[in-house]
Amino acid sequence: MAVKIITPYVYDNEIAEHKDKFWDLDIYYEKDTAGIGSDLMYQKMWNQFPEHDIFILHADMHPFKDGWWEEMLTYVDKYPEAGMLGLLLLYPLQNNNYEHYIQCAGGKFTDGKPDHFGSGLIVENKSQFKEDLELDDGRYTTVREVAWTTFGGCYLRRSFLNTVGDFSPEYEWTYNRDVDYCLKAREAGEHIYQIPVRLLHHESRDNKRIKDQSKADMESRNLQTLLAKWANSKFYKTLDKEIKSG
Image (tube, rainbow, N blue to C red; front, side, top):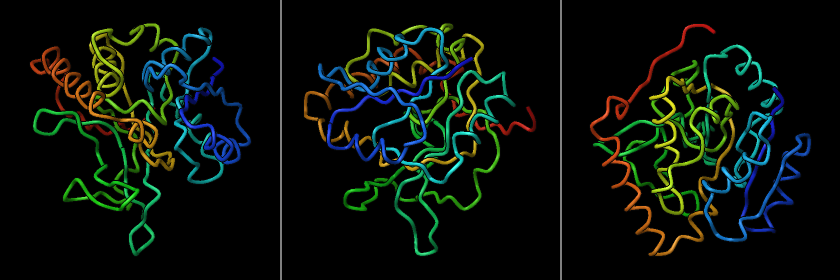
């Protein structure tokens, strides 16, 4: 099936750079003029292409190396049982050995809350919100099945989208809708894989810049909604299973 790349955005001045970085790809851009948030923009955009698989590319992502798109498609073909495939997202920051810090290598649960394999850095000021940061030092070189993954730098088969449908309406603005969506997909028998194809990700630059107290309150309520719905489910557990072959 043909695939459509979608990139919602907030700030006009950053799209020229994005188009330059991804000059060889046919990307559909749409501005979030109504302020509905990234999640509902993905939904709005993927529903415009009902005959396509979807790749969600954030406006603050850049290629890690040439050929990444073709490399990803080989995994899509090799693992048809995976309805969703997440890429290995790296911060643009490196340590003294020129190893990138990992932003997301799939989703997990820590102390009962959604978390990432990786994360923990704020790029703007290079501060940490996790004590231990993970490096791209070879630890995520295999295909892995995970409980959930972030809706960015990810391939969604149309069959996967058709199975789950739209986002659940009880969530507000953004954050945790993607976790809920992935858990609903797994409950319906779908599989979510992480693949070792890399993209650079600044991480939620748009969302963070437009976040105010009201949106922070929405994020908090979303977490409570997620917990009420899934906390006692068998799907609300970390999954990190290596997949040996396609």
